Amino acid sequence: MEDCTSHALPQARVLPNASQQTSPTYEAEAEEKTSETVIQKIFDELPVP
Image (cartoon, rainbow, N blue to C red; front, side, top):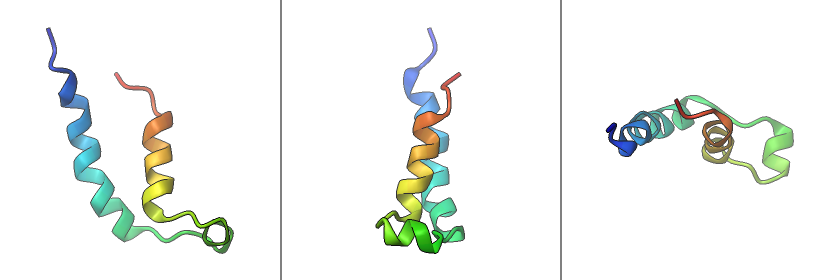
């Protein structure tokens, strides 16, 4: 049986680094979206293998 936490590890590593390397657009800032929330939304919508 595969450890179900193994899929969370890449996300935990990527989120802090990716959020530092991205900046939200003017529209995203107007909607009070941060880099972290945008990246988290991407992770939430990606299928977990």
